[in-house]
Length: 112
Length: 114
Image 1: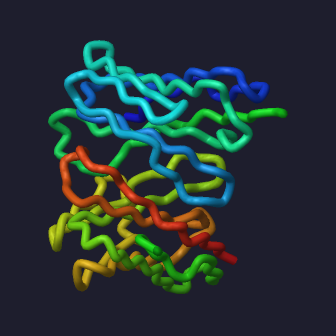
Image 2: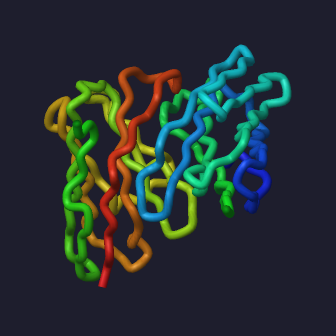
């Protein structure tokens, strides 16, 4: 069962902030965030593990609310290079699977 | 420094003609994954290896097979490609299993079926 991402798409001006959400109906063990540009491989952004945590990397940060089974990715002061499709990939608790189940993605367009 | 290498980057095959895609890694990771990504869709896990242990996803068609002859290499065999198998095939690796470690993706092989 695929996690649900929202919004499906967002258009921003350079310098604006964005939030991308990922929610699951099943208990999550970990959430992995990736950015993918057209025709390229997904690039790893960060991983959040069960236990509820928040991570940050430069102007990109994320939170994981274990109780709500959801994660959010925060993009601050967006840059043109942030454009792309953002995917959350989930690993479910007790699922016995190591591969990621990806959401449908959020298309982010940053305009000058 | 290449870490996860996929060959070829582009593959064209004919309907029904077997094709093999290759993935190699210089990270010495224990786990290797194959994902299929169709146009404008999310990557979908086909199967993965933990060392030599093969794990197939329940909904992966029998048409897809995989081999991992050693730690560094993993192959995806499509026995009889159909038009619906046209996609980007992504190989990924992680150091450990359990969903606790980063998965590093290769550049992908884009498969066209004529």
